[in-house]
Length: 325
Image (cartoon, rainbow, N blue to C red; front, side, top):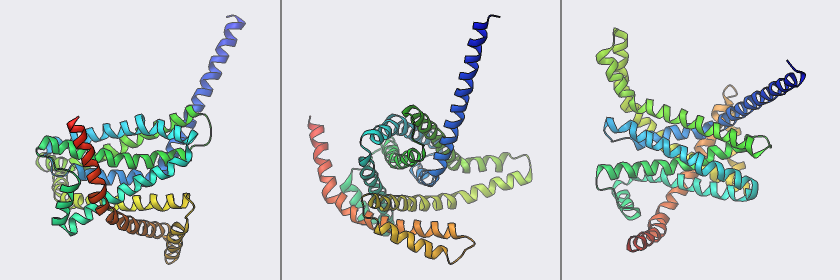
């Protein structure tokens, strides 16, 4: 074998080692970035199942699939390039945009609480803000569109957190890390959601076709437990909207120079955490989430009449113009 060929093979081997090291580095960064965004990921998983509630069993997985597809489009086609471009050229725009998204989450969460407390007024509010779907197909499309819209806000938060954890380097490296984060998180969230919404069917199958007594008993227990679990998850999903939205607003205000509200929340969280030194992280997180949620709920209730009497009429005018065009 010639010396030139040996040198070429050495170069190829060296490049392969560099490529493998780079891949390991990108994978490690993606896992670290995904872990940092775990809070928003959990919120996304808690929020999504409520959009499937009320549909027939055969439509549950197709609806989850539509939402998952919309989520991956959100992340890869819109948010990934937007995050890289804004980070490179207009970094100051990211914070206000996230705050707008946070305000929308607060509004969505407060709307659910409002519907629970004042069902008649909430029905009138929904009629003013937007017409209800008139048939099951339109209702499904409406629910999917709403879920994808909410996912967009949570995905923006996930991608922004992930981008902030990536060490400064080439744009290609950042893009690859965000790509892995987007695909991995979407698979985890919507794979988990699919399991949750089909858990009662799995339980029913085990209860009727299980090979062992314990297996059939587990299936019956799963069927009995799922309605309460889904109700709890719906409450958690609504709470997630207001505490994530409130947290985004608090962090955004600090980024704009008004950091007193965030410091106030952090101070109370530290004080509460000191009460039980054995679990300071849990108490601190719960306190921060509760106070952020309270802020988000108040802001959301303020935005309900704003949406009804200011934003909805403007959107209605645009709809009429578009319909007449």
